[in-house]
Image (cartoon, rainbow, N blue to C red; front, side):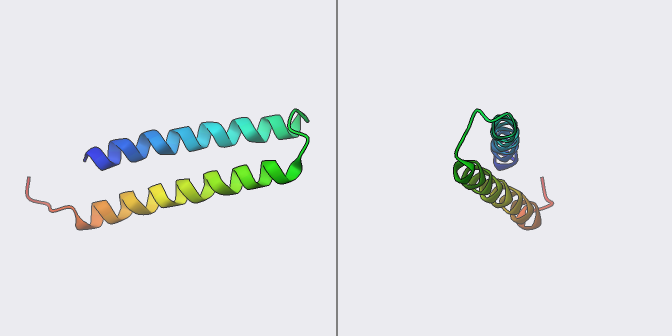
Length: 65
C-alpha cells in the first residue's frame, strides 16, 4: 500500500505542476509555447505511468491481509 501513497503524492504533484504551467502559459509568462506543450506532455506521461502502476499494483495485490 506504500506504492499507492507514493503514487498519490506524485499524481497530486503532476496535477499541481500541470495546472501551474497551464496558467503561466495562458497569461503569457512562459513565452515559448513549445516549452508549455513539452512540459504538459511530460507531466501527462508521468501521471499516466503512476495511474498504470497503481492499477497493476491493485490487480496483483493479494487479498489476504
